[in-house]
Image (cartoon, rainbow over all chains, first blue to last red; front, side):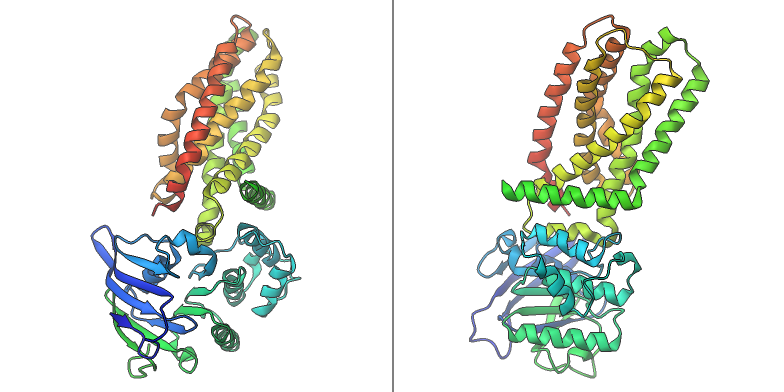
Length: 229
Length: 225
């Protein structure tokens, strides 16, 4: 069992058992078995094609396992726990023609959030201006990334799955995002970050998960700097 | 039920707003339908009697092809930035998305029909000899028949490589009963030779069956990889 080195006593919030995901003849995940404790920040590392994004999509319920199972908060039907999961993909998952408030307003309706101030608050949390009326298409790449994070945080999920949240984000904004993630982890959220900029999280992350060829090959409490991407 | 209606309304409002800003679907549909009206009018130059005989087929084939443009657009904007994934990870019911898309397409195609019908009347010198009011239920039922299946099959062809070609290949054969009903009902009303009642009932039955089938199957389509 691939288990966190320092969190073995805490009951896991996520259990993955022999997870296999095949796309045709290509196996993106090859028998991943792991447990993850709650309220921790995990960084998933690995080369391109190692299976990081597929693992994240599987946890989000977007990619159905070919074999094996995923259990989140004791449920194997991930639709039952979708309100507890916030997913930020590499693409923004936003409508370019709509403004930030219009985008989040729509996604709030999907989660039946009726508090109209929630959208403005979460936009402010990621250091954007909710009164900005221009469409997202006119945002910088970094602003889009932050708005994408805001969309993932909108329904206050317990588990956050973030795929490359720092790509195209300037250094200061990236550090702001890291501080935000740290505060959310302290508030009890479980966070998974797939990134090629692991050094940003070197001091903050609880655990680094190393993937290679569709498998978890190592789990360490510290970033192995020699191998760090 | 509240959630289904509320999310359907929110998704429809979002789609109408997106279309209002981009005008992608309506412009392409209008341009295409306009071309058909003008080109066929100059090619055949029919008299009033001939027009009544061929107009049913011509009008609905023009609207069908134009509708395919809108149907492709409707899902294409969900693929940009993979926004559809945001819907898929949410607890929102799949049928809300389907109903909103189908209603949106229904509105777009109805607007197209409303704008193009006067042109058809002028270019083809059309005057109904039968009960003209029946053209309204025929148009509404026929348009729903085209868009409900079109929305469903556009979603199926979403992940295929050549979805612009795949959609007509899937949609046209299954829409044949509806097209037959539309063309015959319209021709009978225009010529006044026979009653269009049978074809109107057929269209209504077709709508009920395919709407239920699409609603039952859409969740599987949405969450397919």
